[in-house]
Image (cartoon, rainbow, N blue to C red; front, side, top):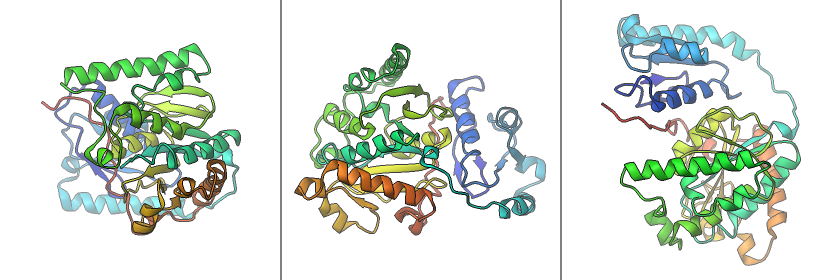
Amino acid sequence: MATTADGRTHGAGCAIDSQGEGLEVLQRTLGGYARPPNFAGILVVGLGCETNQLSSLVQTQRLQTFTIQDTGGTARTVARGIELVRGMLPVANEVRREPVDASHLVVGLQCGGSDGHSGISANPVLGAAVDLVVRHGGTAILSETPEIYGAEHLLTRRAQSEAVGRKLVDRIRWWEAYCARNGAAMNNNPSAGNKAGGLTTVLEKSLGGIAKAGSTSLVEVYEYAQPVYARGLVFMDTPGYDPVSATGQVAGGANLICFTTGRGSAYGCAPTPSLKLATHTALWLRQGDDMDFNCGEVLSGGRSISELGAELFKLMLVTASGEPSRSERHGYGQQEFVPWQLSIVT
């Protein structure tokens, strides 16, 4: 267990292989959350005897930490935490906003509660906006590996080198082996809600999901929560489950999430703003309190994909500049920190 200064917790870190992939991914994810610009300081609290020892986490990630056991129990831990956070405030209070250009945007691309409209409205609109992000020197992170399955060739043919394409294929092969040893099937990804919304196969879902990536070259492939340094369109290997996927993207450096949905969503992703894009106008009207952008005008013929993409790009800039998203106004995002748990629990 670990707790950051804004109170978010997770349920992993003990009873896992101390030398395994799961602990490596967890520590990489926790370390990544020390970097978002919306965190002025990070305080990590552990129990003390867990496998994810804070001493080793500090060695790899340089975080300020302490444990409940060494501090002497819950009450003293709370007091110690308050003392340390107060010590961070003078530095945090000196921070001032500075104008920067759009090349600083790192946008995590998500789709959840997808429906039959996702691949023809919201995802292509987001793809058009992504092309503008890349054109201005920014970065877009496509993820959710099980949700590109069967259509990965559309990305490999856009890879800027053979090595980049092979990295993506290697991650697909890893997932096939991962599913096989757990008795799961890669070709059965659509959820009950997806199917109720008109999606019937993983291929339909994958073809629509890749539309979020626009049309530019794929410049790099990253594993879960690895720091993203490349500029342009990149891919990060994550599960399709949105909170886990977005957690990896934010740990990798995403400072904005764009989340398309057809069934509806009330998702947030603090400390990173999350914009939710409705695939059709009926959803926009029904759940407009949670939606930030309506892509349904593509379906009615009133607006073009490129026109709405340009409008969405402007909304990205406004949101990155401090205008609160719907989920931020509702206070969502404090509980959606969900690192990918890979190791078996023993």
